[in-house]
Image: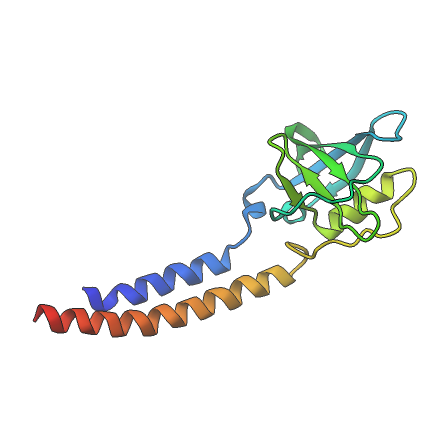
Length: 174
């Protein structure tokens, strides 16, 4: 039975690589509302936002802070655009002075912003920042390649290492 453990672990790693995105488990689409900063009134983003645009990673605070910050409320929406309940509220820090856009959770933790989402939100702001560059974490299909590469190398390592360790354990037992 110990001999088959590397196979089970490898299968689990491959399955995790095929479904890496936590954003895929979220609702089918989202809509958002921007308020605060220099906006006179809240602005609703009518474009449907795909869930993978909300894949973000922890990051350092966007120092120096931008002059204006905004409140970004995200709502669940179905494929026809009907808005549902509020999903999350963040403080949005637009990209500025070479610093990538960031969001801050109510807990104070900062996270990256997908470049697609940053471009969309910045397009609704009165004066779009000069640079809406993102750190690239979680943007597009590139992230999927990194998950697969890491999972494949881990699978190879576990298979080779598990086989050697398993063989040694069996020799000690027998």
